[in-house]
Amino acid sequence: MTLVSAASGLRRAWRNFEHGWHRITVAPSEPLEHLGAIAGLLLLLLLATGSYLFVVFDTSVSGAWQSIDQLARTGTFPGGWLRSLHRYAADGLLLVTLLHLLREFMLGRYTHFRRATWWTGVPLLLLVYLSAIGGFWLNWDQLGQYSALASAELIDALPLLGATLTRNFVAVHAVSDRLFSLLIFIHLGVPLLLLFGLWFHLQRIHLPQVLPPRALTVGVIATLGLLAAAAPIASQAPADLARVPTALHYDWILLHLHPLAEAFSPATVWLLIATVLLVLLLLPLRHGVVAPVAVVDADFCNGCRRCVDDCPYSAITLVAHPNAKAGRQLAVVAASRCAGCGICAGACPSAMPFRRVATLATGIDLPQRRIGALRQRLRQALVPGSHKIVVFGCDHGAAVAALTAADVVSFSLLCSAQLPPSFIDYALRIGALGVVISSCTEGACEFRLGARWTSQRLGATREPRLRTHGPAPHYQLVFADGGDEPALVAAIAGLRQRATMRALP
Image (cartoon, rainbow, N blue to C red; front, side, top):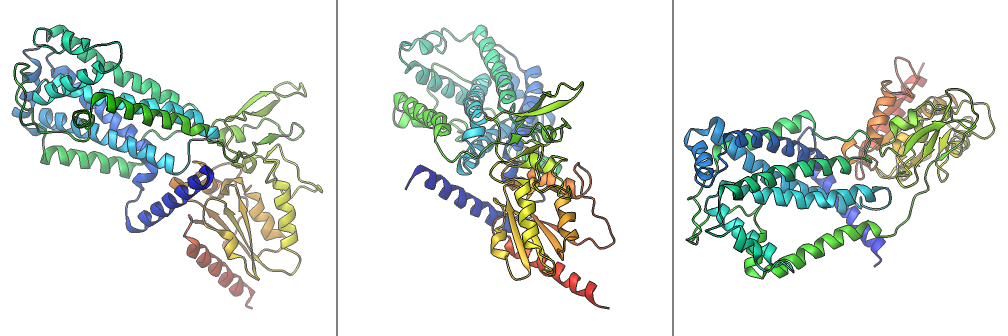
């Protein structure tokens, strides 16, 4: 089995898993489709609760443990509750980040135009680990003491250090107020680096979703808030480097590297970390089929910006038009960023099928799936007197090709948003009984924004708008992922029935 076929198999398996998950859940917004945004919300919670904890924290050896322990003794709200919320948000951030990475891997979203986003995302995982583990040291209870010593031994296992960290920083004679100032600097500095790295991570994403939908936001905050109230986090006994802790209330989510180092060795843990990082960083170098990028035709591009505003990956910019007319601009495509999704072609105003030209040329188009070729195929399918229902679908959603019948003709596009809305009106004008537009659900869209733009264009809230009007429109938009073909069958049956009723005297 080749790497390409293995990746394709993983992708299908994960798609089937998510489709089954959607069938058994009743959430208004699917968490799996907003993992990155949920991680952003958890990071925001950590910054908010951490700001409060920093205000009340005593950065001294004698006062560190007492200042945190006192929060739990003054009641569950706000101090102890916020401290518990901070811990649970940290647990959640690591879990959601790992799950986000797993989902993107399973869906194959790490090659070609997504390489830069993947490469800038991998280091963020290390920063999440470092910030989370450093938070236990500040508490300076027995668990913090254990984590500090275990972390120092892990770092001392690196070549050229030779146990200097344990001897100079985490020994009885070395623990001082100066050490806690250093720990505070690390625990505050790493999240700042995390925010800076997150900015790089989102650079190639147009309109990134940094927070989940309102329903998910309320659900996540409510869940963590109830958990913090029902199972508050309490400090363990104060740290004492002269004694070895015998019983600890362990956080297996954030501190699982320490038991691994004990069970095997620090060198083994470093080898594991290096291997995982190397695999993650080499994954984007896997070669596969590269989709042709969008091509701009200067004769038909007027610099309207629609393709720029609709591109999901900020792959299109505007430059001065070569015709040298004042104020005229021309779209330029960055090949390394282009997904080859065709969304830009669906946004171009020159992609108008009603134009009286033998060959429909547009300002921007995909060389492998030209809009002009779609118009030609549509004309051939809707010969006078055919009276067929037209189905426009997406290669990554429901399989529309399987719906072809005597009175149904289907066209599968790279993305539903590759379809200019005027094609719906055009199909109806040249004899179609009705038109069904099949789009992936928004969270499952292969190209992020395709389903959203399709919905807004057909809803006349985004240019190019659908111009078809009337009391009984003969088209229907259906959100259908792979496995949702019955929904399309029902939509076709409904259009067929309405067409029959219109034909009655």
